[in-house]
Image (cartoon, rainbow, N blue to C red):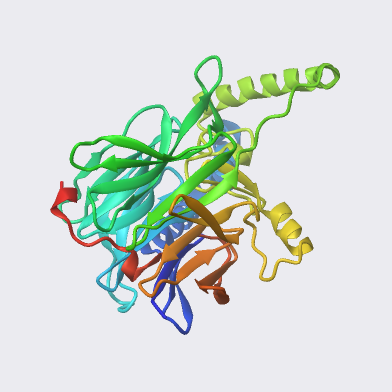
Length: 397
């Protein structure tokens, strides 16, 4: 079987066709060690009565209790090594890890505290990347792994994500969704239904491939034979308002508004938050912050524990936390064919098979056969060696 790499929470997984092995991200590991060492080294400064009087002790306690949010966002193979993107609290980057030589140091490609690097797809020495912004938007970019030059190709008030090189043309497939804003222009954390678009890398011409008000289409990937694969999920529409319920909830909404004002005040002047869930800013797209019960993925919230229980109740074999309404689809000859439900990512294989994941397990599909090949805690990104596009000067920066 073809080798597979995958993101599992803050770790990198490799399935070699027979067994699975997990690897630590050196950057994330060093970040955690530094945070722990810093707290230990500062402990003596804030233990006395003078520190308590000045209020330093309380600030130290809050910093010591600060959580380290870390996740591996995307993975790709490159010459037997794994190129991966990650987020750690307010920083993000792309590194290359040699999974064959455990003593080899990771190679730094790019890092940033202003932008977040999410999904990846490799074509030669160029990566098609999703670049997240602090305002809730994201764009499609090209990253040269040798020169570390980053060029953004799309812009606007939208979430452009999951770029994928076409194997035989100069097209880049990606999904795009409009960003929800309130009356004052603030990000609401919601998006319009995602559509699939193509971008011509030469002319920069955009074309719409799949769009429907009732469904969101994400993670487009094109096979060697031209068949288009993607994940199709229902668009969750808001229900009509209930006047009686609005009246009953009015006092609670007033309290919520007051809390929101206090939260903003504390964030501005205290550089912290009133609750742990708000640490790191108001943008839920910034990393994959989760307490094990709620996950923000591809513009949608997933109640992980509820979905896992629901899938088990539905007698789903090897259940995961991805809703069964998230379906892996093949689009060919103008017709959709559902391959499997409960899928958040997949990778096409050279033999015509498909790897896919439901968050907790990874499967290999070939025709009507489906076999579990690996288990995971929180797998949302996978890639095979054959998934990389061939080198193409059209994609060179």
